[in-house]
Amino acid sequence: MRLVRNYRPEDAPILAQVFQDSARAAGATDYTPKQVDSWVLPAADPQIWGERLAASHTFVAEENGEAIGFGELSEPGMLEMLYVRPDVLRQGVGLMLLQRLEARAKRLHLNKLLVKSSPTALPFFSAQGFAVVQKQIVLRKGAVLPTVLLEKPLE
Image 1 (cartoon, rainbow, N blue to C red):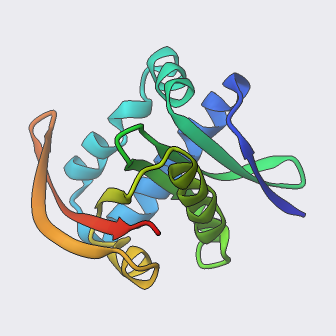
Image 2 (image 1 turned 90 degrees about the vertical axis):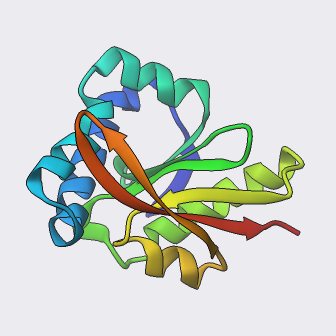
Image 3 (image 1 turned 180 degrees about the vertical axis):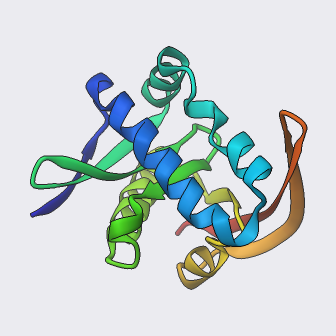
């Protein structure tokens, strides 16, 4: 059975792995190996990674007690991360997480969600009502990562 629950500190190591596996799988089509290596850097330090997830609104999707995805929302309404394991892509896990994150944003009285999407995830977010605001680049450890800033109004 699949469910979405609040983040717990003991989730940090497995979510780092989910993040890295997902980014490497998704990034293989749109980014160079150097770009992907720079993309996964935030999970390199377990303590900083865990503190980051604990400091925001983070939810974990699990199946039979095993983490299969997660999403992170910061207070200004930025969807910081939404990642699922590559073996459960296109099975509704990302949508479950997004719906929980949207519900939290509404409870926080936010009027919109923002996300910096990779080109790979752009179709997913577009299908969920996000619109392109502008194309951007992120510089991380000498690598240039093209992204797209998206916005979705919340009712």
